[in-house]
Length: 536
Image (cartoon, rainbow, N blue to C red; front, side):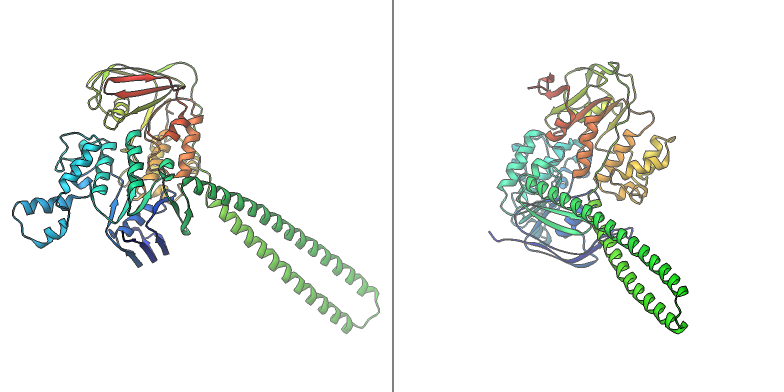
């Protein structure tokens, strides 16, 4: 098979609001399984669109050999038809026109060699156990988050492309379909670039490439190698900072001592001149020579001090480039008080069997099950965002839902607006500080939410939920790790560990489930709702 490459040649790109995202970016992606990581808002998804040719750079060139298939992260709910979600809408439309009698050369060129596209899609859908009645013309909004991702991936496998660029392909997938995805990626023989923060998925990559403000940097090996290399870099940066601080302190001390010695010499010279019987012209020459010598010494000292200060700034910048992120859990109330109770609850979608549920403080419930079984629907019903088909829900304490729709963070409203609306009495400076500790700077929190990355909006939604007034005593979290960068994921795991209230979380990320430390596991199956003890 021919090796295909993707190359960036001095690429620069500005966003619609004028911000520079990339400047003079040069890099070559090799046709091996590559994981692309980076902080939320660094531009990973924009870079993917540049590589796929969906947008063009402001300057520089993108060179690509072979066909490139880009799988973006499906919206929630997904828009358009099922066929469009699979990324083959134009091909299916061209095929339909040809079957209706079209002889347009453009339609035949669009189809290429993929005359069996419908059959291949159907095979993929059947293998993934998607609904039997699934049709490319149906609206994609009928699908759950996991089902939408399965359909999108089926388009990638059926595309016959030379390069696959997949943006967060494991989002929403249940455990079985994640394992299926990992196996399919290992079997893929073409070029592969995967944007992800799924640590298990990244462990299947042959190399990791990181995108930051300085550009793209390649790390050989899978996720573990990258994590160890980044940890070593951080340790080296910390050591360099300690060394630069010590050196700068020595230079400052040397400058003070030199200044004191000079003052002493000047005082001594003044006394000796008053006592000496020398001609004024000789005394003037001595003073000039002394001042010149002092000036040269002072200049050298100043240059050394400036150099050590520059080294300190550089070392400090290297450390601050990867800041620790933080989420605050709040105090919360303790005890065994009931927070929520559901009786004979039947969902409008998914599992049709009744559920009995009682949540008390300090409970931590992990909700697991196959895609489309009703896990997300359950959280939305409990939060009163959807009506139940039957049964009753008693909400006995403040609760908050963080779901994938992020309805409170859309359009022109900013993250700061949303957080302040959730807690009008809070000190604005305190809220800004807490947002900064999530990696959301003063500029980002004031921009329209629609202009931010998915990960930035998730961070904003987390802040709106956690820092609300009244503070929630029960958190309902639906795949909270989706779209979060690695630093934010670690902050979320620390929050889950420290949260004093009750938690109910839907997730397929075993790292997050471990951080949750569940007291109970609620599994939805074809036989209904089942409770499990999380302990082995």
